[in-house]
Length: 399
Image (cartoon, rainbow, N blue to C red; front, top):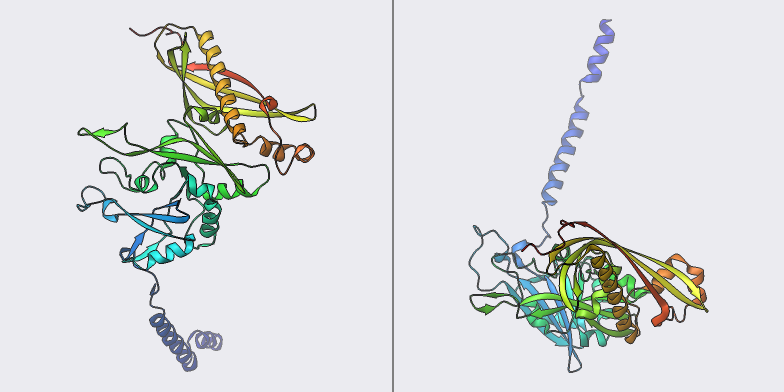
């Protein structure tokens, strides 16, 4: 027993050679820690300028690039925010291709420009017409700092003025309509935003037309102390195909699109004898598309269904009449938008893409150069509305 205990104790007690080996290992670890002293190659956050938005225009056969750089001093809370003269700085340069223009901007930059927080890209109509969307997507897709979640917009307004718009009051300069898109889309769902990933899909897969949200500068609606406050508003869409710019559809012409996209809330004015009688908000409308073949052509049956809430009654009107007029209004909006799209030789409702995904054999049979031929008789529309809320029994004005 004593001999066995002595052997176990000898095994548990490290010998001199083991101690020396552990000491050598400890020294090596210490030297390694000295060499690997941390994030020595990381840029310091306060020594960079952060590009938040990019604008692209085409003027006099040259590409014009705008960068929006927010003043980081405007992003803190009122208790810690310093007094600043401006919320954003606009950088402008022009040349023959986007990459060389940005590299030329580097020559006058006072600090390193960082594109990892870039949130949106807006292109003018001339830029779209001259194929600069494809060029900019190629550049951003290759550049390691940019992300696929960048929102894409089109405009017919002055880009420099658009990029100069910031939020109201003391809000952070980076929280605008083109960056915090879902915030306003929840209350009025006219056009759904699109990011870089979705744009690339729409321009590369068969049966797609790219639908880019169109924004504009509003200098009339918002005011403070008697002076107008410029704001950004959504006005419609720009339609593009991989090798062709189609055009803009805006204002009343684009209203039909909201019924065939993922919407949240859509307001509809019900007319009686040509005058507004009530206002109804339709919540989360759904749509189904069934494809039939008629006389060798595709016919798309579009069915819309939604629940509605009456938000205002101006003139006495019955529930049945409201539903009837709502159906007619939605059918007219869809058809009007569809006809506007046909005039541009475009497919705003992506009917060709729908057939491509759900009945490829029929798509293959009917397609012509990657899309389905469409005309005014190619769609049929039906609508179901259910009024569910906001005191349906009160079908007359409150006073």
